[in-house]
Amino acid sequence: MSGTSADSAPLVVVGRIQGPYGIKGWVHVASFTDPRENIESYSPWLLGNATRGWQDVDVEQIRPHKQGYVAKLSGVDDRNAAEVLKGKLIGVPETILPPAGSGEYYWRDLIGARVLNADDQVLGTVRDLIETGAHDVLVVTEAPGADDKDGERLIPFHASYVLAVDLDAGEIRVDWPLTEED
Image 1 (cartoon, rainbow, N blue to C red):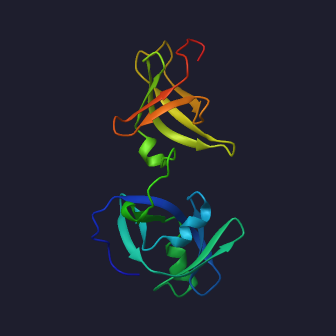
Image 2 (image 1 turned 90 degrees about the vertical axis):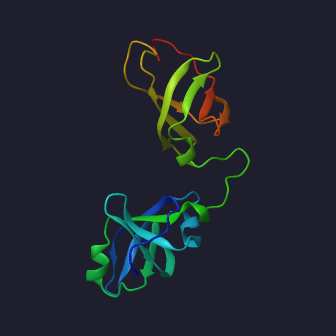
Protein backbone atom coordinates (compact mmCIF):
# COMPACT_ATOMS: atom_id res chain seq x y z
CA MET A 1 0.00 0.00 0.00
CA SER A 2 1.20 3.47 -0.71
CA GLY A 3 0.87 6.55 1.48
CA THR A 4 -2.06 8.82 2.12
CA SER A 5 -3.72 10.12 -1.01
CA ALA A 6 -3.16 13.76 -1.88
CA ASP A 7 -5.98 13.68 -4.44
CA SER A 8 -8.43 16.48 -3.68
CA ALA A 9 -11.32 15.02 -5.73
CA PRO A 10 -14.31 14.01 -3.60
CA LEU A 11 -14.48 10.30 -2.87
CA VAL A 12 -17.40 7.95 -3.37
CA VAL A 13 -17.60 4.87 -1.16
CA VAL A 14 -18.04 1.78 -3.36
CA GLY A 15 -17.40 -1.05 -0.90
CA ARG A 16 -15.94 -2.32 2.35
CA ILE A 17 -13.21 -4.74 3.35
CA GLN A 18 -15.02 -7.51 5.25
CA GLY A 19 -11.98 -9.36 6.55
CA PRO A 20 -9.13 -11.67 5.55
CA TYR A 21 -9.51 -14.51 3.08
CA GLY A 22 -6.92 -17.26 3.39
CA ILE A 23 -3.33 -16.79 4.54
CA LYS A 24 -1.72 -14.97 1.58
CA GLY A 25 -3.13 -11.47 2.15
CA TRP A 26 -6.38 -11.73 0.22
CA VAL A 27 -9.43 -9.92 1.62
CA HIS A 28 -13.21 -10.38 1.39
CA VAL A 29 -14.82 -7.35 -0.27
CA ALA A 30 -18.46 -6.24 -0.13
CA SER A 31 -19.45 -4.21 -3.18
CA PHE A 32 -21.90 -1.31 -2.77
CA THR A 33 -22.06 -0.64 -6.52
CA ASP A 34 -25.05 -1.32 -8.77
CA PRO A 35 -24.45 -3.56 -10.55
CA ARG A 36 -22.12 -5.01 -7.94
CA GLU A 37 -19.51 -6.09 -10.50
CA ASN A 38 -18.71 -2.43 -11.25
CA ILE A 39 -16.30 -2.52 -8.32
CA GLU A 40 -13.98 -4.64 -10.49
CA SER A 41 -13.43 -1.77 -12.93
CA TYR A 42 -12.63 1.01 -10.45
CA SER A 43 -9.02 1.88 -9.82
CA PRO A 44 -7.29 3.18 -7.81
CA TRP A 45 -8.95 2.24 -4.54
CA LEU A 46 -8.52 4.33 -1.43
CA LEU A 47 -9.00 2.56 1.90
CA GLY A 48 -10.04 4.27 5.11
CA ASN A 49 -12.76 6.61 6.25
CA ALA A 50 -13.48 10.32 6.51
CA THR A 51 -12.20 10.67 10.09
CA ARG A 52 -8.93 8.76 9.79
CA GLY A 53 -8.05 9.55 6.21
CA TRP A 54 -7.57 7.50 3.09
CA GLN A 55 -4.66 5.50 1.65
CA ASP A 56 -4.09 4.59 -1.98
CA VAL A 57 -3.95 0.89 -2.70
CA ASP A 58 -3.34 -1.03 -5.90
CA VAL A 59 -5.60 -3.99 -6.62
CA GLU A 60 -3.48 -6.82 -8.00
CA GLN A 61 -6.40 -9.20 -8.52
CA ILE A 62 -10.14 -9.26 -7.79
CA ARG A 63 -12.65 -12.02 -8.44
CA PRO A 64 -16.24 -12.88 -7.48
CA HIS A 65 -16.63 -15.05 -4.40
CA LYS A 66 -20.02 -16.10 -2.95
CA GLN A 67 -22.09 -12.91 -2.43
CA GLY A 68 -19.11 -10.57 -2.77
CA TYR A 69 -15.53 -10.55 -3.96
CA VAL A 70 -12.06 -11.46 -2.85
CA ALA A 71 -9.15 -9.22 -3.73
CA LYS A 72 -5.37 -9.28 -3.49
CA LEU A 73 -4.02 -5.85 -2.64
CA SER A 74 -0.46 -4.72 -3.27
CA GLY A 75 1.66 -4.78 -0.11
CA VAL A 76 -0.81 -6.98 1.80
CA ASP A 77 0.99 -10.33 1.82
CA ASP A 78 -0.30 -12.29 4.80
CA ARG A 79 -3.39 -12.84 6.92
CA ASN A 80 -2.22 -10.48 9.66
CA ALA A 81 -1.86 -7.58 7.21
CA ALA A 82 -5.28 -8.40 5.75
CA GLU A 83 -6.86 -8.49 9.23
CA VAL A 84 -5.76 -4.87 9.85
CA LEU A 85 -7.89 -3.77 6.88
CA LYS A 86 -11.12 -5.30 8.21
CA GLY A 87 -13.94 -2.74 8.21
CA LYS A 88 -12.14 -0.16 6.07
CA LEU A 89 -14.25 1.50 3.42
CA ILE A 90 -13.25 1.44 -0.24
CA GLY A 91 -13.44 4.83 -1.90
CA VAL A 92 -12.78 5.94 -5.44
CA PRO A 93 -12.38 9.46 -6.81
CA GLU A 94 -15.74 10.79 -7.97
CA THR A 95 -14.11 11.78 -11.26
CA ILE A 96 -13.62 8.16 -12.38
CA LEU A 97 -17.32 7.28 -12.15
CA PRO A 98 -19.21 7.26 -15.44
CA PRO A 99 -21.88 9.91 -15.83
CA ALA A 100 -25.37 8.77 -14.88
CA GLY A 101 -27.54 7.86 -17.86
CA SER A 102 -30.74 9.64 -18.80
CA GLY A 103 -33.23 9.27 -15.96
CA GLU A 104 -30.57 7.69 -13.72
CA TYR A 105 -29.12 9.25 -10.60
CA TYR A 106 -26.38 8.52 -8.15
CA TRP A 107 -27.79 8.27 -4.63
CA ARG A 108 -25.21 10.80 -3.43
CA ASP A 109 -26.78 13.36 -5.79
CA LEU A 110 -30.27 12.81 -4.34
CA ILE A 111 -29.31 12.95 -0.66
CA GLY A 112 -29.96 16.44 0.67
CA ALA A 113 -32.48 17.31 -2.06
CA ARG A 114 -35.63 19.13 -1.01
CA VAL A 115 -38.80 17.13 -1.71
CA LEU A 116 -41.95 18.97 -2.81
CA ASN A 117 -45.30 17.61 -3.86
CA ALA A 118 -47.34 18.67 -6.90
CA ASP A 119 -49.02 21.39 -4.77
CA ASP A 120 -45.61 22.97 -3.96
CA GLN A 121 -45.79 21.81 -0.35
CA VAL A 122 -42.37 21.00 1.12
CA LEU A 123 -42.38 17.42 2.41
CA GLY A 124 -38.82 17.49 3.68
CA THR A 125 -35.28 16.58 2.68
CA VAL A 126 -33.85 13.30 1.38
CA ARG A 127 -31.78 11.88 4.26
CA ASP A 128 -31.09 8.46 2.74
CA LEU A 129 -32.28 5.88 0.25
CA ILE A 130 -33.23 2.25 0.78
CA GLU A 131 -32.85 -0.48 -1.82
CA THR A 132 -35.85 -2.82 -1.70
CA GLY A 133 -35.21 -5.00 -4.73
CA ALA A 134 -38.28 -3.75 -6.57
CA HIS A 135 -37.20 -0.09 -6.54
CA ASP A 136 -35.36 2.38 -4.35
CA VAL A 137 -37.17 4.31 -1.61
CA LEU A 138 -36.46 7.90 -0.57
CA VAL A 139 -36.12 8.41 3.18
CA VAL A 140 -37.44 11.94 3.59
CA THR A 141 -36.92 13.79 6.86
CA GLU A 142 -40.01 15.91 7.35
CA ALA A 143 -39.82 19.67 7.09
CA PRO A 144 -40.40 21.47 10.39
CA GLY A 145 -44.06 22.43 10.61
CA ALA A 146 -45.02 20.25 7.64
CA ASP A 147 -47.60 18.59 9.86
CA ASP A 148 -48.10 17.73 13.53
CA LYS A 149 -45.67 14.82 13.69
CA ASP A 150 -41.93 14.89 13.67
CA GLY A 151 -40.37 12.06 11.69
CA GLU A 152 -39.79 10.80 8.22
CA ARG A 153 -41.64 9.64 5.14
CA LEU A 154 -40.74 6.73 2.89
CA ILE A 155 -41.52 7.59 -0.74
CA PRO A 156 -40.89 5.08 -3.56
CA PHE A 157 -38.36 6.43 -6.06
CA HIS A 158 -40.47 5.23 -8.96
CA ALA A 159 -41.99 6.94 -12.00
CA SER A 160 -45.45 6.46 -10.46
CA TYR A 161 -44.51 8.88 -7.67
CA VAL A 162 -41.53 10.93 -8.85
CA LEU A 163 -42.64 13.69 -11.19
CA ALA A 164 -39.30 15.44 -11.73
CA VAL A 165 -35.74 15.55 -10.44
CA ASP A 166 -33.86 18.84 -10.75
CA LEU A 167 -30.32 18.24 -9.50
CA ASP A 168 -29.26 21.83 -10.25
CA ALA A 169 -32.03 23.19 -8.01
CA GLY A 170 -31.60 20.36 -5.50
CA GLU A 171 -35.28 19.43 -5.72
CA ILE A 172 -37.39 16.36 -6.29
CA ARG A 173 -41.09 16.77 -7.15
CA VAL A 174 -43.34 13.90 -6.16
CA ASP A 175 -46.99 12.90 -6.46
CA TRP A 176 -47.44 12.55 -2.71
CA PRO A 177 -50.08 14.30 -0.63
CA LEU A 178 -49.33 16.13 2.59
CA THR A 179 -51.80 14.56 4.98
CA GLU A 180 -51.99 14.09 8.71
CA GLU A 181 -52.23 10.31 8.29
CA ASP A 182 -49.00 10.34 6.27
